[in-house]
Image (cartoon, rainbow, N blue to C red; front, side, top):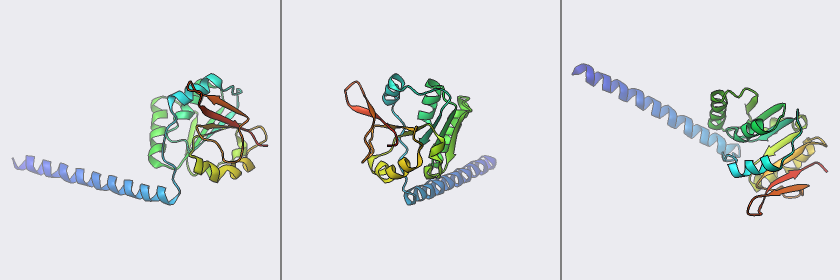
Length: 187
């Protein structure tokens, strides 16, 4: 009986330590994300990805960058449907990076690079395609930076939201005839 009580007490202490560290990690991560102008982790919807699959004509052997890629869902979509050379994503959310790398390992996907860093550290000029799924406020904040740092031939693929100033050179509409995918180039 004494052994059982000691064992239960030990399990309770271990559980409390795990809960304390989890709460500490969650709160510190939340504070860090808020201080760094965090963008919420929202994955690309299947319907939007299917719309891109039907309409995008991406050239083989090119590179793609996903700004704030979350868990890399869109990157895994691009790797499965387009023959590009390199897929890179930037994300600052620790959980999303961990989850994305874990999913890639489980799915045995080796050529997606998810980098835990603010995407403003990325060299945009190295990529042929840039995928973004960011809210309009964030897109307005980064618009001039993006267009100053891309190459003449870089194509920006924006899911759902448009830039404030630049006009897309092509748009794709979903089955409800709502404009959903916007393609941009440097002027």
